[in-house]
View 1 (cartoon, rainbow, N blue to C red):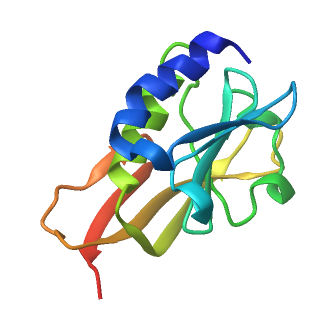
View 2: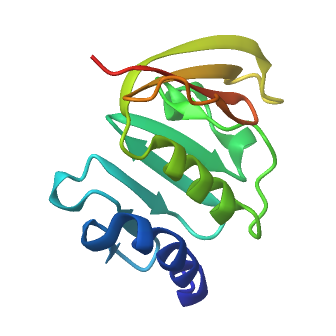
Length: 154
């Protein structure tokens, strides 16, 4: 993990999350960025520069350059980004999604199967994720095959 990548996330997210933000060096292979302090219900783990797993309200978003090597047991119940992963643009994608999920709670998801990965061992899906908020009039947010729609928090 490069310090440059950690610095990029810190510069983008620490001003938004303040003291809740922290970086944990779990091992030489991965780093966890915690966004909600001790609650640890909103965080992401960096597995190198081209694989991120973002956890929010017990949901997991997978961004992996090696997507076609994953099988259904790796992705079952998860939200898998199906677009191209580029080392240079992945941090901006993650920051954008994090900012769209901040201060919102999970209210549901819908999955639509669109096909199979080349090996045939997993499905390609489109996702609609419902995020509860106090301002449901906010425009939906699309990131490739993932659409975030907002609904009124109850």
